[in-house]
Length: 432
Ligand code: HEM
Image (cartoon, rainbow, N blue to C red; front, side, top):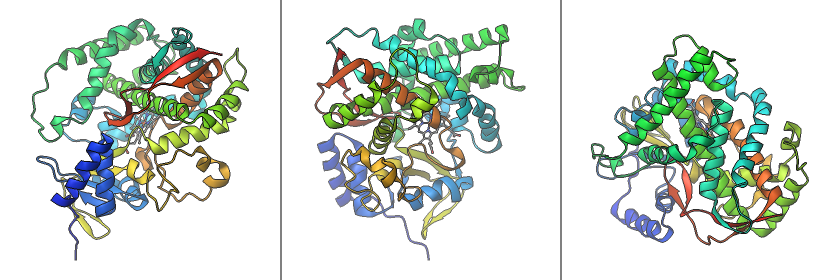
């Protein structure tokens, strides 16, 4: 006998609404639903009725055991409209082919070649900081992440374009962020096409320039251009996918990490000590980066508390059975990374920032699929290693050179394309 999926009835929805208003974040509402209804529940909104799953069994179900029965691509969805045939929104053989093509540029053997760029990009941005001024780290981290992404994977210096393409990039992120379109799919969305065209023009221009230069194929753009059958449109889709997925996530991770460090002075002190022990006048080696154990713990804990990608979204390709609950074909299925990272059954005091929980002696006991900031299974994050190395380098370099004081007292987790600290992370930056 199949059980129906518990739904968000009026009483539970009222509790969730209160939490949403109190915390100014939809995540508070999701926590109420989870608490009241369990690891599987259906959210009932006009025009939008996703089934939400949480917990390690659910993650294994979505990411591994039922992965072939869950599609990523959803026609009519803004993510698909923007990324068209990008690796993120393709399924089956098309996805696997794209992933195989791009994997080498993000393989761990490539990372040591990116260290200097990551280090220098951080300097290029921090050099614009005047001693003692206030800066919003959400903005600054985006600038750094964009410079790094474009220079490492596309081998272009993005600094001259940063101002011109800043708004088009933000617009494209807004285009795929949750909004009215979720419950009203046909809602007119004026004002985006010009921004998206500007981005496209730029991407097609760098593709043409690379084809004309016919240089080495040792970066992502080079690999794509050298792959038979990849036309300019298909390459544009991969570049835009990597541009968005590869910088917006790092921006969120870095700004959350700085917010958490800024609001926990003892942790900040330990992180600064570790960063200051690195050489100051040359980029670190991969061994030195691997030795940043405390920063590692801080980053893992920031990813646990505020996973930039806080849920994964799929469409059931056929009827599915999760623990006796039948999910009909065509249903939107979401697995919540955020809720899984905050389950009391798996995390001691989940709301507390405690990097020590990731110290090696505590780490060993962790059950599988309880910690998934980069997803899991064959569609896990292609940039997981890149993102972790990048965040350690950027944080270490900033902490070496600046002491940071948080002036923004309260932030809330905003559900955009990623989970962002809003209204921002304002800090006073003082040179050491
Ligand atoms: C730094 C923090 C990052 C986090 C927390 C993160 C998180 C994730 C997660 C959770 C997924 C799986 C989503 C799902 O199951 O639906 C994912 C997939 C993906 N990520 Fe990341 N990511 C990060 C950085 C990056 C970077 C740096 C890149 C590229 C350079 C990247 C590119 C991608 C792509 C292309 C996919 C889709 C993979 C596929 O479907 O085969 N991400 N990421």
